[in-house]
Image (cartoon, rainbow, N blue to C red; front, side, top):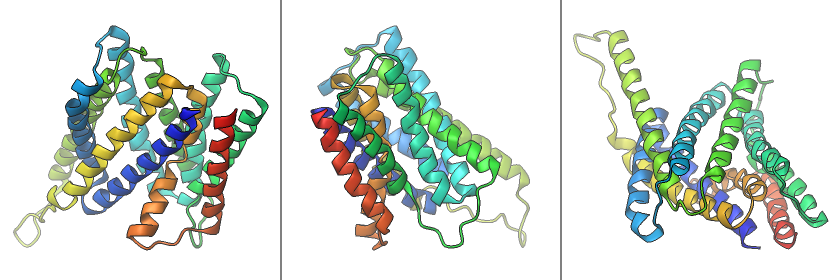
Length: 292
């Protein structure tokens, strides 16, 4: 019964991390924000390591490291597809695919539910679409490239969940530490490549090089976002250890809920009626999954 609660709570925490990451990306580049978030998340995990423990088996190291690669690819594709737009279609599409991939994997590997559990899973998938919907005026049909990127982003998020689930039950925080270490390495390597490329293209303006905003404007938000995201990963890991992948993957895909709730509180953004409906369905689905 605890697994659905952890899944929904994890989704809200993931969404909060995305909100902070979005604020950071507005002030510095998205790649820099992702790199700083990965690094701060790694620090949090290392601080918590003595309390949760870790067993550095080959499986924990392998699957944890591969999950870091999958997470980095997913994040890059997600940012790219949302930049292409429209977000109103691509955002929920990514979330649904991120739920369906591990859900299918779990069912193929023997996970089963009572009748009310199946209904709860169906409602949760509908809630994922509604909560992830981003109202846009004059939204146009998505281009094929955006659709492919959205599906690929969701698939790699699902792969990340599957890989974390494959780690041994006694591995503690070892998989998450490897995940963050690999993720941070990839993102900072990307930052370096982007910086070198931009420096070669840069031309003097009035005899001076155009000023760079640097890292400082988005630093607090990126660091906070990474710390919150690390906590969400711990909730995910605990949920996978005591429950099953199918429930955790579907409920984790409700991560936009945390973002829209914080945006409404902090930025006074309006929650669309369709998103309210999704939030209500998410609560109903959580109750059904807990009962089933």
